[in-house]
Image (cartoon, rainbow, N blue to C red):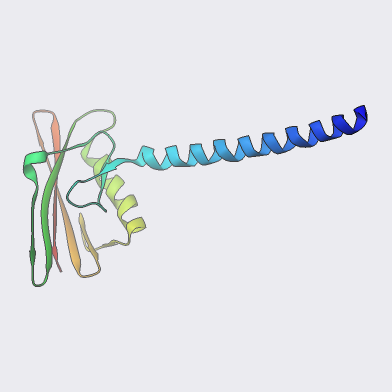
Length: 136
């Protein structure tokens, strides 16, 4: 009887260990994705915002036309180790294709009849990325 309890205990421990491993692996993968983008813009819910950037609440403009939607939004971040012009360009060059966007020139992207343009400016140590989304 003791041998049977020991075998059941070993099987239970083996299963518990595997479940814990799968849970931790899933938790790690979710955190890797959230490290790339901490959030999405409030007006363009499928446009990721780079970690370290903050949406400029007063910059949002949106309206619809017969040809499609038009959005203007900006995000700011303090220049430093996490935020630089090069890192912002690289982040969107790597992230936007995963969301179905195709490059249409320098800092320009197209997807399903829409065009996304990025303009980056720096003033007094603050990097601002302006996003314009309009019909193609």
